[in-house]
Image (cartoon, rainbow, N blue to C red; front, top):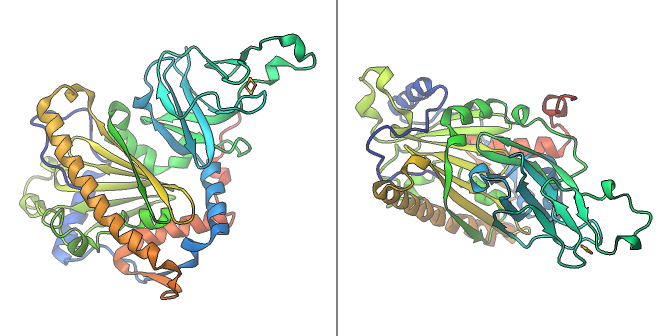
Length: 408
Ligand code: FES
């Protein structure tokens, strides 16, 4: 998928810095324009169709998602002590709460007495504790069990061992990362992000706030939904009236930031700047930069805001796509800014619907026997990378040593 803004803010669109190596990326975009094609590997790639259709495979993928840090929320969704969010993440009910010290804690959203959810899915503010609706055990925002009615009924219970089940959680670059499998080895989020950390720091995602969250549901395997984001070979035919007029045809710069990825989609305005002083080049004005934070978060960097889509499996042939816009808070009250963001996100959702039409059509014919493999051409290398990363992790080739949290 590719994304386009409807304009940009008039001046000083800070915060929102730039991509780390913008000049080199723009140089590559110009080279792609001259060559009339994207950067390409030597070979095409064959992806077995069974990887989209096998329920046992999906169960493995869900375990994989639960073991590694996932973006569970944007930090901007919970800025003050007592702010909380309850949501299902890959089949696990998760409770996020910012405690009195300002730290975000993540717990399994289940009472330690007999397992009832403490909070219904949703969000709120001003909490100092959570009381179970069943028998009223009460927990602090740090997860400690602080209240048990008629406590003499539990003579053998050690209260200090009965706090909420804590999950590894870290707030980085404006996102809350959580490992929802409580048995998973703790992963250092900066090591996990690798080169992505540097990118997020430069983009300034920590300085943005969430604007107009939404959620889509699609009748397609979660990986088919993600596949539509990872190449622009389809833009001419699928997005003819929406973004095809804005972007160069089938031209992009691809970078594997393993296990993550970056795709730079240059706009048709690139020729205007080719002969200008390089120091004046602004990557965000002349391209959309699309990141995958492995495995399921798509971050589109637009001139003065970012669009986020996340894809969660919901059965073998269904997925949920929470989406939101990250915007600079200084423009939140600006009618001009709101108008630009509204128009931009209207296009983004229109493009997503066009993509979903394609992925749902693939899903409908997935078990027809037409294809044993899908062929990813040399224009579609980021798809190959994504599926290679999933495969490597499922085969136990994750670099746990590299990702492991240093012993405290
Ligand atoms: Fe929560 Fe009993 S299940 S207090």
